[in-house]
Length: 123
Image 1 (cartoon, one colour):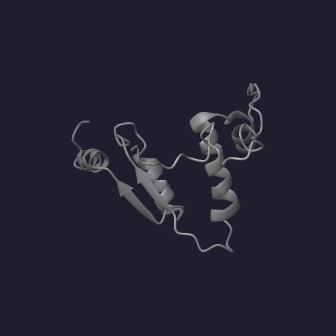
Image 2 (cartoon, one colour; image 1 turned 135 degrees about the vertical axis):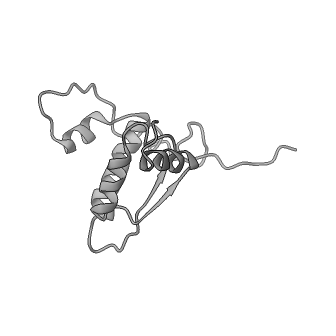
C-alpha cells in the first residue's frame, strides 16, 4: 500500500484545488525595462515567474505587512552559500545596522569566509 502524501496547493491536477485557482494568477507579460524604472515597477512588472515571482510576492509581503508599524514582526535572515567571497557581507551589515533584520541564521560557509575576511586572509 502506498502511503498518502500531501501535494502542495499549487500542484496541477490536485483534486482539492478549485479550477478557478489553477492557472488563475495574473498572466505573465513580456517585460522590457525602459530607462530608469522605479523599484516598484521592476518588481511588479518584471518579476513574474518562478523564483522571481516568489521574490515579487516576498517584496509585497515585506512592504505591506512586515514594515507596517501596526504589526509587531520579528524578521530573520537565513543565509546559505558563500556571500562574503561574493562581496555581499556589507549588505548583511547594512540590513542589521538599519534594523531591518532582527536575527541571522547562517551556514558554516558564511561564518568561515567572514572570519577569513575579518583576519585579513585572502579569499
